[in-house]
Image (tube, rainbow, N blue to C red; front, top):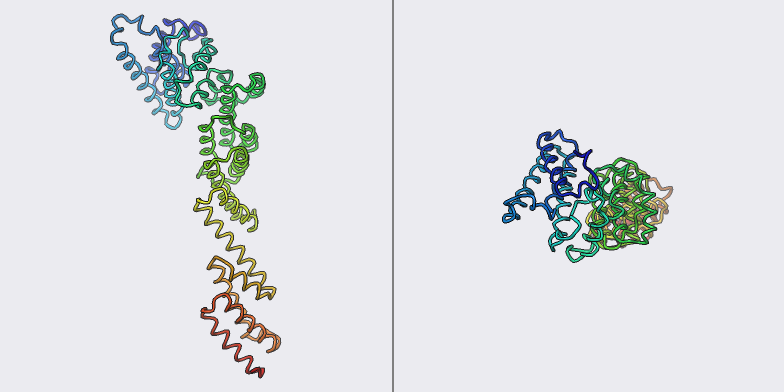
Length: 425
């Protein structure tokens, strides 16, 4: 039947009804064995049949209970699709999404009596097959008032615009086929002179293909496509949210390649658009990338600290980023403490500990002091004069950092011993 009656034939209400009923019987008979293309054809025909203005004229006795019958056939179709989707497990979600999105679209257009228009309300896929996509596109253009928001309006028009066929390939998860249309889509974008519907649809195609490449591990290709779609068109907050969720994934925090792509894309997105949601996602991904690279020894502590300062600046409320910044800052100060103590610059080391906001730095300072004190007591210094000088400097520095520290008394006693031995009053 699909071979004998297709294209414009589908505009005849009887042909549409036959396709809807036949595809229903095929799906019911085949069950889980039905091919995806058959299921999608059923959804398109059943929903288009449901909203066809001539639906009830061929059904004697149904005019009075039209709405009741409409609900009845809707429920029968939905039940069949949901059953098939459940049988497909993880692969079943696209069919439910197809049903729900197209039903919502046709319901929106019919809500204000649009099913009385000369052009029938067909799902996008069936409209393209029947050759009436352009007519429905014009219908959408003229009725923005029936859509809940500007982005819903653009998304609906995009399906019937020149970007529609590529979007339908995405729906069928035929990403490679959709990518083959990129060149022609880019050319049409120039020809359409910034048409908002086409621009929105093109962004949807680029984003879907880019994220699919990312999921497949084609990182360079994914990054190119995702950056190429930026800046996003006007009125695309839903697209932006979808992109943020896709890039900032907890299950990818240990994947350096994924994180690298996410950081580059979010950096570009932030450059063009910087609402709090973008800042939060960028902060999260940047933090996990910096931690992973530092743990693997791929970046030095100084680079980690720089990255974390940037991350916290993006989102001061991110607890993990703040904790990581604190750890990085403390490590940097302890490293500086090591260097100054090793160079014998006790005054500078004391100032680092005194000015630090971290107890860990103060504790480390006194650990160093104790180590030097032990070396002096073991006689590692060449003479009493130099040893006495060092003990005096230790005491002065320790008192400046924490005059109540328990090691102060030990240092003072040792200093007294040296001074007595040297005859210093």
